[in-house]
Amino acid sequence: MFPRALAAVAILTAAPASAQRAAPAAPPPAKLSACSITYASEGDLRDVLRERGFGFRGYDALCERLRRDGLMVDFTHSSGVLTERAYGWVIARLMRRATRVQGTLAQSNTSMSRTASTPEAKGLLFDAANAALESVAADLDAHAASVAAEEARLRAAMAAGPARGN
Image (cartoon, rainbow, N blue to C red; front, side, top):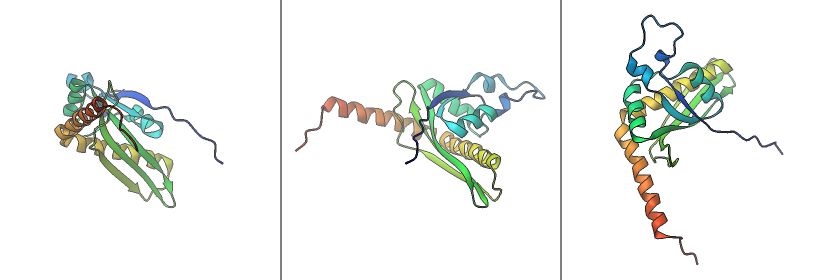
């Protein structure tokens, strides 16, 4: 039998990678540094996002929408090293901050490399997270609507009362 490991989910925020550079050539635009994406993650993805931030097209639109609508990003992920390969995959979905209700839409991305190393796997995880969030940002209205629809479905189920069994 294997010992059980409990993983705590961290609720974190990260600015875009461009806003986290130690000494940028020019100050980042106020819009970039003023908005941070709130997300739920653990382990390697949490660590790599703390270190590198985000870097994807649509960052500003996604960040502003999350802030305005009280949403955050929930990640499911894995990375590792296999025989002669490294991989990183991410599933990203939106979730209401106050209720933790997740939307039904999700975006996923998998990245692989022939360089079999842990640093490579972490880089692939970073790439996969940014690609998944870029896809969420590209279809932001649908992702936000899926959270609202799931909340409505849950409210209706709660109002109907307990299901009656045989």
